[in-house]
Image 1 (cartoon, one colour):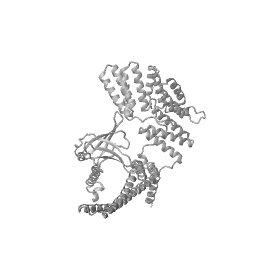
Image 2 (tube, chains in turn blue, green):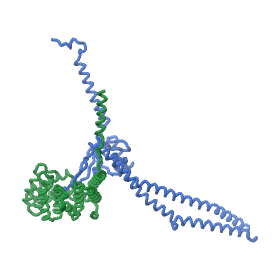
Image 3 (cartoon, chains in turn green, brown):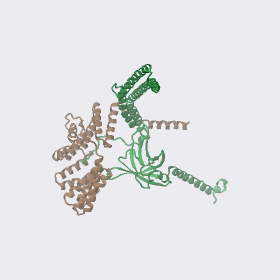
Length: 299
Length: 272
């Protein structure tokens, strides 16, 4: 008995067509996986390098490792050693390995104000040093976030501006004393010039022809000095005033922005809390601990 | 039409899932934030700051009559004080729960406080007082109380401290083989089993049990206990006449001790 389908032209070579369709579909899916793998760097040859961190905070397997802002590999493995330090293995694409030197440093940098942006950046190291061999070990450092830097900058700048202002305002200070001496010197120069004028007027005819031009030249120099000194004193005065104003401006800006720093951190915290308790981020966050701090029978 | 309706419904559901949970009253939210900050400080090894923050958390919980929060903060504060070797302060803090005549704190908090006080007393060598406090914890701890295995291990430890190695071995073995015992207490039980066997001159078994405790302690990354296990293994190996092996374990214990000391918390501040 022949099937009805055999007589219908549309069913001619049905198995062949289905096979071609299946082969094309499977090939397409395989190609998509291969392309995704290529994009993710799965097929790129990698070498492992190692570093040791005191704590595994902010480090995670799969996090990108960057050099000069370019992704050059990923963190492959994190493990605790016998003394509780974290051994970190990073898989680096082999073509980038020569760029890492023996004195390169892996730094964990906190990116933006909103806490999540953590980057593992490897520095290039010194030109003279040898390239790191596969399986080599480099140093690890942790750097603070924007808030830490802002607070540290504020803590360091404020005392400096305070000292500067004290230095500028202190009447017994070196700067004020120097200016005072300069003014006195200028006044004394005026007197010296007047004396020279008088001396030239009463110069005895017996004075030799050589002495008179010398005295004239001396008078000219004194006159030039007398003209220049007030300008110099004025310039020094205005420079000091500018310096004082700048110091006061910076100090007031620092003081005005200082109270805003905790607020900014508080707002950032609110945003981070809001995001971390919302779907789908909350599923990626560790559960907050509750109850008293752990203690067992041997603590 | 139906498609559009379904899309809108799906979007609405996703938005509902995406919204954060409703916020707690400000004082409670602040107390919880301070509490989490304290835990973070403690994880980073900054016990001094953790103690200050737990003290703030305690005041905040007490200010809104949150008994559970206050009890948790008090016990945490005592635990941190003990970690900083400020044991008298730790005991005084726990006594605030244990000697409470007004009946503010429910039995589970009293049991926790009693257990921790017994641990502190055992650590300071006051074994008789520890036994007495531990028996009150035992009474307060009901059948499915989470402190059960800890209480039993502490009983074994106290027996060992009093020189009764056979009793210690029996008690610790039952905890080590019990279902549902946590990793920490299983490791503690195995260490006591090993120490008791060492006293009873059952050295091969002691070596095996120290090794098992070491594996568990390594998985928990507890330096002090890894050091104890290694020292135990060194002692047992020396008794067995394996001098080279003993020296190797002793060297490893020294490395762990030195490295752990470098990460130790800072000096002890004044009591809050």
